Picture 1 (cartoon, one colour):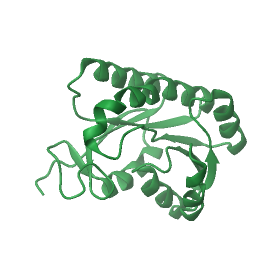
Picture 2 (cartoon, helix red, strand yellow):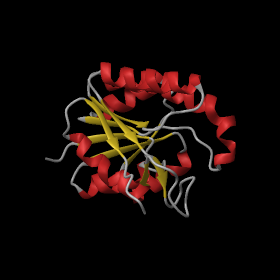
Picture 3 (cartoon, helix red, strand yellow):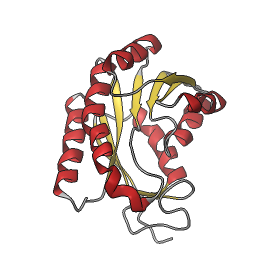
Length: 196
């Protein structure tokens, strides 16, 4: 049954693949980006563009309230284009996972939230704590956490071939995200560890 879906992080590596799949499924989609320049891309993908920063709680709450979604996809990250820069971006991504997640859950006002996470262990203890707190917040709000394997394919850190497991081709990851609309609250893993 078609529903109204708000995708936060709609221009990210999963978001740009997820939005057209949701639209093709008959859903009404709002796609959030913090970049006014990406609004045209969201229109092309079939979504109603929403330019908003997740750290502006008042604007985020207004955006969600105005659209009135049945479900919210949390696909927000703040990652570099080059994997070599991951260390410099870790604090920024931690802020998205912490403050950004709290703001999105607050603005969602009890609506179903389906949030991106990871299925591999991070080497840094602080990163692990941030991920655990992010997941706990979503689960305590009655949401769904999707633990993805490492993405590979166009637009990822592994465009030419798969990384070590756990992994998932980015197109498969987007397609396998759709069933999360109908699963009960909890954790789900989206990874394919078959040999390539």
